[in-house]
Each structure stands twice: as C-alpha cells, then as structure tokens.
Image: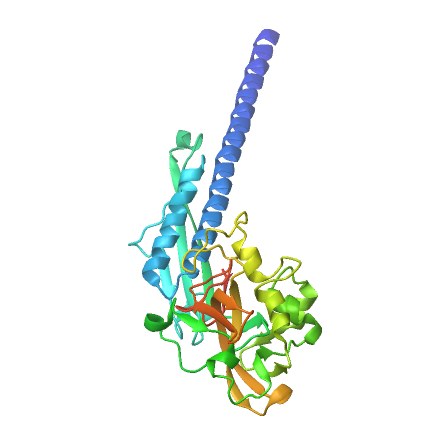
Length: 348
C-alpha cells in the first residue's frame, strides 16, 4: 500500500514539473514574441516619423511628397537588417491636407499650413505562438507632420523691395541687383545704401551680414517677423560691407569662404548647393513706408533666399548681384522662390 502511495506521489510531482516547465516555456515564448512586437512597433514608428517629415518638406507638391515618403521607407529597408517596412501609394498610407482642411485627431489648418500623414506597416512572424495557432501579425504605426509659415528669421541687415511680386516662372535663378542704392529701389530713401539697422545695434552689423558663427544671443536679439517695422542703417561705408561679403583680412567674408578652392563649397552652384554655403543669405522683403535717413521705415512682408553671385566693392558703381533660389534648411522649407521661410514639425 505504501509503495502504491509513493508511486502516486512521484507521478503527481512529475505532472506538476511538466506543467511548470510548460508554463515557463510559454512565458518565455510569450516574452520573445511580445518583444518582437515591441521592436517592430518602434521601428515602424521611426520609419513613419522620418517619412512624414521628409514628405512635409515637399508640400504643397503632393506628388513629390508622396515619392519622398515612399523612398524613405525603402531606404530604411535597404539599410536595415531587421524588419521590413511597407507603405503603399494606393491604400491611403500617405495622405495630405491643405489650407483650411481638417486633419483627423489634430484639427483644422490655417491659410498657409499643409499636413501629411504617413502610415507604415511591418509584418511580424512569431517564433513560438504558432504552436497555439498564431503565425504572426502586422504592426502599423503612423506619423503626422505639418508645414507652416514661420514668418520669422534672424535679420540679415540688408533689404530687398517687396514689389513687384515674385513670379516663379520668371524670377527663379535670374540675376538681380541686391544693393538697393544701385538698383534705384532706394531712390526715395536718402542716406540708405540698402541696409537695415540691426535690432541689437550697429555693432553687430558685420557679424549679422556675415552670418558666421553667430551666438545664440545675437540670433535671439535680432529675430524679426512678418509685419515688423524696421529702420534704415545709414552712413555705411563700402569697407564695412566689403568685409562682410567680399573680402576681409581675416578671410571670413562670405565669398572668401565660399570660393576657397580647398573648401567644402568649391563645387557648389546656385541650383546645386550645400545648405550651409556662405553665398546663401536670407533677406527681408520689405515695403518702404516713408521718412528718410536713419528714420526711414520698412514693413517686412516676408523673407527671400538669395545666392550671392558676384560683388563689386572696388570701383563705382558698386554692386551685389544675387539670384533667388529654391532653398530649405533642415527642418524648414520654402515656397517656389524661397521668398517665405517655413517650418516643419511633427505633431502626431
């Protein structure tokens, strides 16, 4: 009788051990498969974020925006040894919204804002769950970015006339005289040679016009926005702006840095350039309001990106020749001529 009882106890222990092992194995399997889901979800979100930000830089050109989103998803798959992400151009994976439209779960857009939402899918094959009939699943994540006018920039103490309105088909890449006193646009502004007074004072003129290693304090102190009224900076000698744009003993003028044959920008052109090329300058587009000399007032309508083509600071008539360019900084974009500064941000 005792033998039978001991055998029964041994059998019970074996069953309990087997059940415990099965539970442990199940938990391990669950941990592995859940871990796969977590990793896939994170990668899907990362890819969606990158694709949405990239696409937002292209709007309102939706065709280009869609192509960029899809290419960024594909680029991730080419460089990743992990999960393979998918994004379709036909099933609503890339959606766009324009001014005054409403993005679900976000809200309505104003008159100059565009939005894009990118949805990314990653199929996940389970390792242990197939034992209970679950072969796998698909993880889906989305990201939404908007592109809106920032209407603000650190002032380059130089102005360009807001009129006539820019025509992308005509003005892009065309050379234009940027020295307002030479172009005639400053004819009614005696004493102004085409320059603006830095908000932080004339002592920052050289650094702001150079745009070289500006301190955060200088940038913050000289931020201007659309609708601001600024005044002329008069009595400026040619030597001052030559040192900023053309030639300086310290080698830090814009053209000296940009044209250094050993420098990183030596091969850049106005239609194929690196975004930090010193030839590029953001200039307020202004309307002359009235008065003269240092009291002359200008209303900022927006901003333009110019490529400085050539400078004559040696012999009269002095000139600064530039071109309107298509230009975007990381995280920002511009319209067709770069006349308005935009910002792109991820909102969902």
